Amino acid sequence: MRLTPGLLGELVAAVDMVGKLERPADKQLSAFFRLRPKLGQGDRGLIAETVYAGLRRRRLLEHLGATRSTRDLALATLARLRGFSLRELEGVANAAEVRWLAGLKEAARQEVPFAVACDLPDWLIDRLRSFLSDAELLALAQAMQQPAALDLRVNILKTDRDAVLPELAAAGIDATPTPYSPIGIRVRGRPAINRHPLFLGGSIEVQDEASQLVCQLLAPRRGEMVADFCAGAGGKSLTLGAAMRSTGRVYAFDVSARRLAELKPRLARSGLSNVHPQAIASERDPKLKRLAGKFARVLVDAPCSGLGTLRRNPDLKWRQTVRDVEELTRKQASILAAAAKLVRPGGRLVYATCSILPEENDAIVREFLTARPEFRLQPARIELAASRIELPQSGDLDDPLLRLYPHVHGTDGFFAALLERSALPERAE
Image: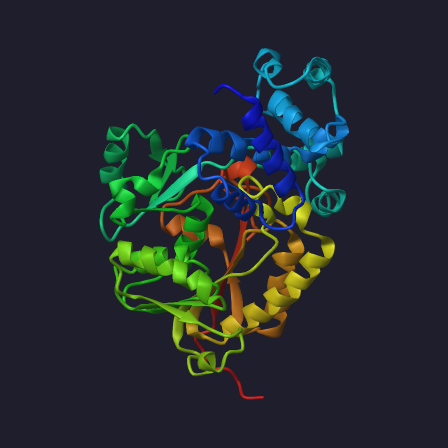
């Protein structure tokens, strides 16, 4: 694509707008493009990919002195991270800028400090060093500097993966089965999936493989009552509903009516009749009390820092703080305690986050088990193996928890704990 002065000006404006980190990057970019309806699809792609590349390697760009101005930042991102040649940039940069960009390209062969190579904030590096070696931390960080693959989930109520793959190939879409999820497809590049007949007809949905595996861990059965306690836009609710072949009931609970509204068109496409969106005021909503002890399976995909999703949301590492995480852990503990009340004796509870921090994961589960001894932690690996899902080990072989990492599994960073409630009646105190 030919880079023009006008396009560079738009890129600089986008870098400036998103770089303030006042809102999530995807929402900022959506607002930016809405104000510029004449920008073509190719121009939008160049701007978005360059903005995200700069967010992924913000610390490197600072180390190179590329943040003196927004224009410098945009040019440096193009030259150092997006692979634009000096010849391509000569038409939009002046002679002094071209000489400076040549130096940045030359500096690519120089070693950088560890923190710069990780391109994470210091507080997060310190947290990760508590359970990862420097070699593991660097591998994880570098994997998070790469854009995430586009993963799809096949709606098994309507079709199967073997039928979908040839249809995607016929449309010129390079797609292969996901390595672990039996209902997943990984797509190369960024085709317009939302315009494909399979998507419009509800046969496929966009969903990261890690999210699919968490649903496999809950393993709902036909005819059961199931709760997706923090449903959001309902991706997991739809996965669970399809796994149950549209039998039983899946309650999609969320405190945001706006997010649940996003589920409605997806639910209509899916053909499912067993998913029921339910807005609640909080985890202490009175309507939940009437449902205590009624559910065979409850999924808690808790609000979290999202630090496992840095491949697709790189702005999070610069927007989240230690205080944010501390506030989230209090909310996570409260939500898990409330969701557990819904589980019937002998039922199953899965606590999950898209975080990689122990305080949002292991610590929450330990605190919960201390308070609720009628629940027992079950080995996630054994449950997944029952569905013929074998994952590479990413730590202790006896670890009962599910831990997914981009550098090990090629997924978002995800955590899940499988908890089962005793089938025996509890003693009255």
